[in-house]
Image (tube, rainbow, N blue to C red):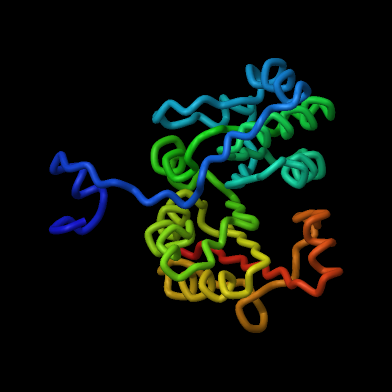
Length: 239
C-alpha cells in the first residue's frame, strides 16, 4: 500500500492496488442439469455484477430481512435455509459455476422466490453493490482456511473485511462464521474480538453451538464420524 493508508485513499489518488484474492476460481465442468438450470433460472434468480447499488426491495419484490452467504459451494444448505425461512430473503455468492448451477437447479425445482445468486468476487459485491445496513445476517461457512502460514494473508477474514461486513449489517445484525479448521477458528476469533463495533454472542468462550437455522451438511456428518470438530462463531453488530 506504500504511503496510502487504505485502498480507498489509493484509489482517490489514481493508484491501483493489486488485491490478494481469498479464493482460487476452479471452473469445473457443468453437468447437463446444471447448464439447463443456468439457462432456465438465471434470468429470474441470477443477479449480474454491475458495480451499482442493488435495490433489494425491487430485487425481491418486498421488504424483508436479507441474509447474504459468501461461498455457498453446491448450494444445498443455502437452498434449505431459504426454504425453511420464507419470511426472509437470501442472496448467495459463489465463484464456482457448477455450484451456481446446482443451487439454481434445486431452488428452481422447489419453486423458491426468496433466493437470488451471484457469480462474482464477494468482496467486490459487498463494496460496490450493497447499501450500508442492508443485511440482517452475513454467513461465511467453511471458507478456504489457507492453512499454510505464508498463505494466511489470503484468508478472507481480516480486519478490513470485518469492518466492510459491519458497515453492511444493520445494527443488531449478525456475522456468522463456521469452519472445521480449529486453527482458523482461533484466528477468526482473534480478528473479530479485536474488531470495533462487534460483540461476540458466545455465552462461554469464543464459540457457539450450531444454530438451528444452519443445516448440518453431509460433509460435517462425515467429519464428525472421523472425530473432526466444527466451530461456529457469531458476532453481533453493536454500533
